[in-house]
Length: 421
Image (tube, rainbow, N blue to C red; front, side, top):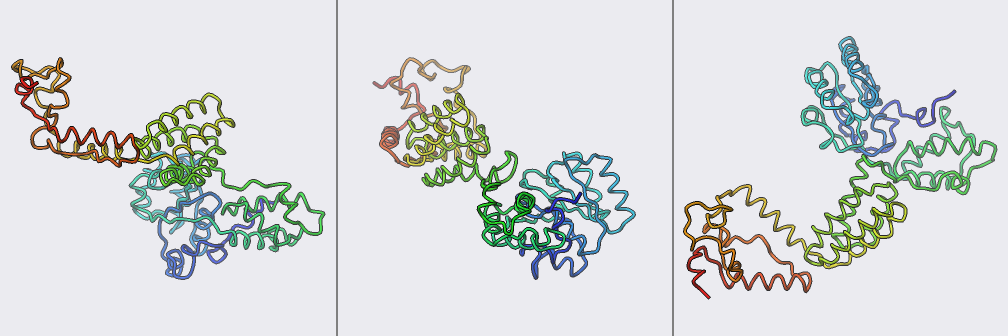
């Protein structure tokens, strides 16, 4: 039984790698490293199927260096210890760790001294953000290299090569250009996904003269953009959803919402929509914020697939609503201020003031005085965190009330306030 087509077509050297010219092209870091016969430790990060592990192995072969391949999902501490012993025999050695973000902290720490003293050079591959998934010590000992999704033209080149290659399909069956470009379009920059479709279709249509686009569509028509919940692309889509709502681009926001709905991640959608509603719409339209909460509650009650209806309503509502970040920016500024300038609460604001005259105590029975009292100490009494955006009639009313109270002023002389009418 032959290995899968995607495995058979894996490049053996950097010269065979398709795309990623920023990594393997003329004058690139990896190319110069090979030319100077000087290996380095680095972490490849990027979407699935873009060639992270493949490039690592091609790099090792191009250098002519012994390498050991492990997968963080399946390898044990004993496997890692075995790799270290092998590296002590074969010098230099490259340890290629696929899914490196899956290593727990103890296993990551285990690698550190051997990377530090040169027992082996580490090449990690991860679909996760290395700044989040890898500890700082590993990052400081490696160089981070981004592997980007392949273009449709690059995927087409890889498919064409696989059809013609002796280790691929060896020309049987034949494919017309439209068929290969259709597969490339579906792939979402994932060469492995594209080669898997090609292999399936070669079995399905092994007795036809030429495979065309319509035939491919009968076995695969869904683009490869659906994300696993723990992949970087998923979190990028969550981020893009909020930014699209913030930018009032309703069509883009609906697209990113649809991606997240297809992935089935209602929890991330709920959190992001609530944060977006309060952060970006806020006082510009409090009713839209409340409607968003109601839509989320409805989505929870009905679940997918019907949940897309109230969620879609909420996204359209938030996108086209007046926006105001005034309150969000105000609390962020207050948080920064409080962390840098701590001070004691004035005595008359304390829960149980000690040795204070009755006329100087907080007037619980005088609501007419509450907005005349000074609540910040003298040094900071004029500090202003809230700056109205006046994005709606509601926020304009708040701003007018705010300005009125500023004009009236505040006092910390409570005895004098109590004597006033």
